[in-house]
Image (tube, rainbow, N blue to C red; front, side, top):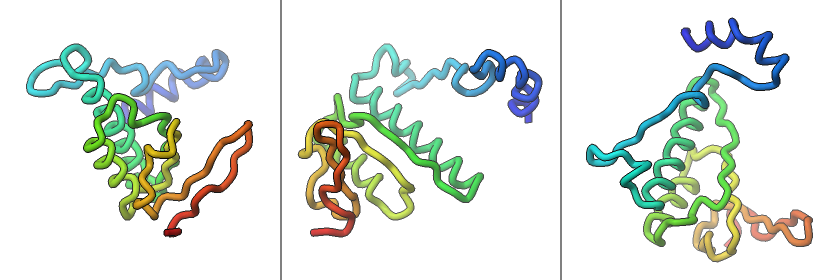
Length: 137
């Protein structure tokens, strides 16, 4: 309710300036792991995992509120992650009810062929072409 009031109060200014002055994007979110600030003490993989977890949580929250899952787009989500953590995150995206997610990865090997629920597309010479459709073996 407070956010809605803040957005409404700033609406005309925000429209004129082309940006929103109130909202979660203006928050300074502090994440901790074992009581230590993740930004300072977390590894790159821990920071990346936390960022992905926040995006998935945001997608799920919006899905519950609107009864419609928004598109989640992640660019190179497995950078700085070890193989085990990457596999666990992939399982999350390939699971039932995961919503529509686009993972942009630099290497085909980032998505193992065993995950048949995921459709795969290639971008070559600026063209997007189907590679493997979901459910194909």
